[in-house]
Amino acid sequence: MIIIDGKDSVLGRIGAFAAKSALQGEDVAVVNCSEIIITGNKKRIKEDFEIRRSRVGHSQKGPKLGKTSEKIVKRAIRGMLPNHRFGRGRIAFKRIKCYSKVPTEFLESEKVIVDKSKKLKFSKVREFTK
Image (cartoon, rainbow, N blue to C red):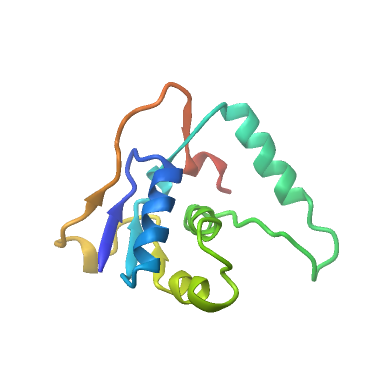
């Protein structure tokens, strides 16, 4: 099992690493999802999230965007998998688990840190949750 610590790491890099590891057959757990950063203009990112969340028309139609940090991260990882509905993409997606904090079962284990370089314009995932 690969445990990825998301504190101060870029969402896209974590997503790519997690997707690739899951496709290779590893179980992946992403912890500290609320501390992951999204690079770019904060105002533009916030507008994009609000537009996507308000787009739900009928109760059976989507796309629906999650409001918790774990769901935002898992959706980003899902976008980096080949067809998450069928075949190997679906199998890989089932191997990925996301947590907003560090669960007690992962406290003692070694965590992988993915590229902690700070960017100029960024915001944390928790700023877009409700």
